[in-house]
Amino acid sequence: MPSRICIAILAFACLIGFGATDAGAGQIAGQRACRLPGADYCVLLGYGQSDATIRELTFRPKITGTAAVTFSGTAVCFIIRNGGLIQDRTALFLAQIVVDDEVVSFDTGASYFYTVLKDSSVNSATSSNTFNLGMTRTFRVKAGVPRTFKYKLTGMTLSEGAFCPVYNATFTVVVP
Image (tube, rainbow, N blue to C red; front, side):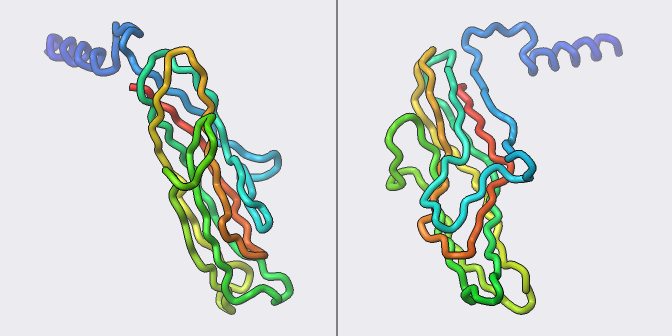
């Protein structure tokens, strides 16, 4: 029985990398979810804003290779009635992308969200829709050369009265 316990402990130590060296080991970097002071969200995207850099992370890789850069977050888009003057339907067309230090182009690597928020007497205060903003892209990285990754969310169409607070926005970078 004691030999089985020793074998189990040794196997567990191997699984978690006990005794492993940093040579050839991968690298992971991340960040905590952001919040605006006094609010439970990170950024508020609203009518009249063309785009917003929601979050960024500067990463200095220890090894050269391919980095998997993942952004996680949630947007809850809603409309606010203003004395009954708001339209019956509010269109939202959003684009998201993870970019590095280079020029931003929504032509390659972006994903899109479209919805129509319908106001109704049943939902008299607001109508809303939730979007999972999860996105992963890969980038070549060079050892010791810092890279800044940014997550951008753009309101291609964001009607008057529409707002989209972004919650739990975080980056994770993994270089295997």
